[in-house]
Image 1 (tube, helix red, strand yellow):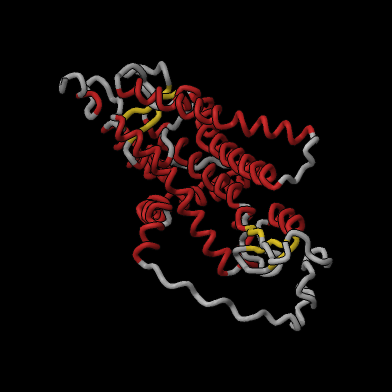
Image 2: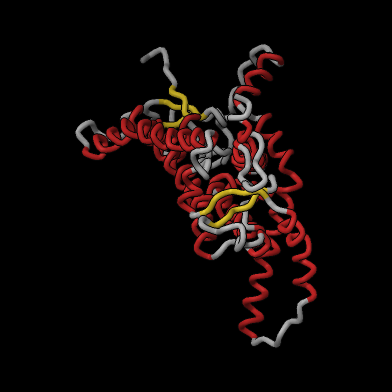
Length: 359
């Protein structure tokens, strides 16, 4: 049995295929970076909503842009994504034999490079957006925002019913591929690598030497005379490359710190911390001063700060404690992801329905 399972942890001399532990580790690295950065942005947005609130509202787009710069930098210079290069791996074009195999320092060909960027950057972005859309549709379905006879409601209810099965099939596809990779029946641990037309391999001694000497060679090469437009393009390219290099260096240095943040803010760890540091229930807050001169707060306690009418279906924001009409605050939070009064980052799940003794 040991002989049959030896390929799981080791590779033969003729085969540079990494073990399942290496490929799973590099997959989990970038998975941990996103939530860790998201926690950092959330803390900044809560501490100063005016200056950093936009980072929270546009986090997905900003992260995708930064991820694009980092991945393009590594794919074009090391033939690997950031996490693959971190674990000493590279992407090899399918059909590339050992005799004609490109060095990692040559980068990926354009076709495989852009395919790799699509599956590394674009697909995760679309997946996150789809999950947020499903979450918002579930909120709408729960609170019955649309009339029961609406065609749109029937459509998204069918979509919500089908989504778990589609997601299960997607995750099952990856699981089957990993099992085939463990058993030595496939060259890819992920279907996305096959879509990109590449496979993973270990860096060779020649690759490491070429990567170490590449910056020195580039600086020693003579620069031919160029036109103004070429100089501008070169300057822009260097600026983008400098930003990508700074981001990649920062990620390389702070990767363990980011993984620690991901662990620290994980739901399991937070439950442990709460159980160890349980405190008694705090007293109720001091009564708000409704005679304040703030134009955002109405003078009467029963008036909604948004529509300036008597509140209907009283709903409080858990992030700030202010009360609004449910419909008013639902649409505001869904559009702005912030409290209308304080500007604190807020999501739809922070809405809490209030029930008075009268109803």
